[in-house]
Amino acid sequence: MIGLNTLKPAEGSRHRRKIIGRGVGSGHGRTSTRGSKGQKSRSGDGSNMSHFEGGQISLVRRIPKRGFSNAAFRKQYEIVNLDVIVSKFNTGDEITVAKLKEAGIIKKGKLVKVLANGGNIDKKFTVSANSFSKTAKGIIEKAGGKVVIVEA
Image (tube, rainbow, N blue to C red; front, side):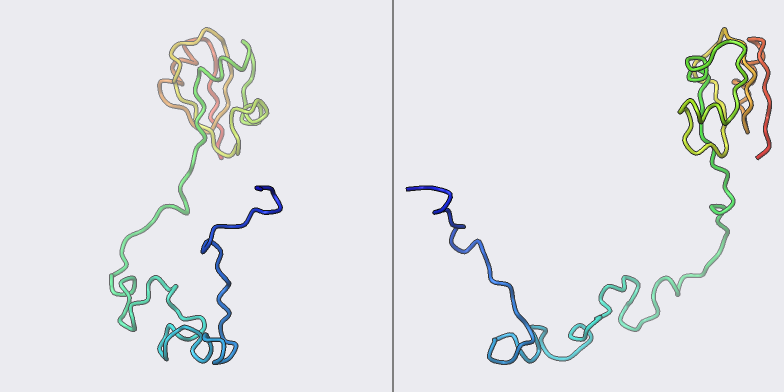
């Protein structure tokens, strides 16, 4: 009769945990299944050092270092498209970085760049941001709005 009390795992599917370093009689004593001597038989074997090349000077150190990375000084803008601004704000509103953050359009709110995605607009806005594309600036001013560039 099959029941929950008679269920057992399939033969050979469950293994006993390997107990190592508990004497020769256990079958896993002495070298604890690691073979004999050498770097990998020691604890903290150093095999996880990806740049280690067996004592040879590693590739990282052989190749000359040149150039400059601008990553630490790069300005990363959060992009806001005009069609999003038109859908979230009313005519005559003064749109600032803080209001964009409040409306959930931007997340971090450090540097904001307005792009012209969405074509022509029919609402008049005063938009304050850190940067504008030429097209976006032209579209806002053509609709009678005002563009204010805020220095970061």
